[in-house]
Length: 290
Image (tube, rainbow, N blue to C red; front, top):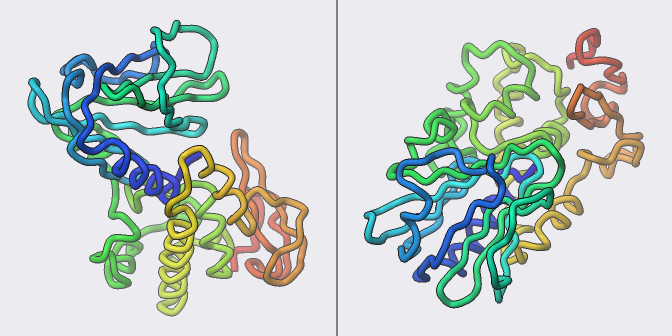
């Protein structure tokens, strides 16, 4: 799933390639992709792109045209991606079983496709007058890399929370933009168990977690800076130290990276670095919380 660093890199890429250009056509190919109907998607045709922003994991393409100022918001979900094409294939794509979900053509002949692999279709496109009209944006917590999101703000955010660190970091209404992969990476850098309760954090541990979060995300954003959209997935994978690396040696201590599996996802961690050497046998029964 694209998370904050990859979506930020896509934002930079689109800001460079889209701003100032006119949208010729926006065509939904998958019936499930478009989540709004007023204004209709055709309202962006002939509009000029004025900017590209990011809200958590949402891309926000701002336009100005005959219908006024509109925002095309995209959430790539777990298996979605953006593919830039210059030139864009001619002709009208046909709905079918392929990965293409939406095609956006520019008057210059270039444009981008939104694609989604697999059979579970969650990629979402919204056309709205205000980004806050999208429920997923309206409920977002603060951006973890925002200048005003300092240690005091992070500490206040966790005050009163009573849940495991892994779940807290992934909750978009608490902190925007962190998903399964980077929560694993942050906790590895912080040397904390994914199951450690938020209410058990000391002042020093809270500061360490905050620093690990900011450092991990900033470094990932820096690695992705300037990388072409088509290469961002590979860049993300190459930079991960524990997530997706079950059975490999930890790059810090050499211990074997272990995994806890869920129904539709999994987490990875290093026992030596994060749990005092004790394996986390199961999410529901493990007592190794330190």
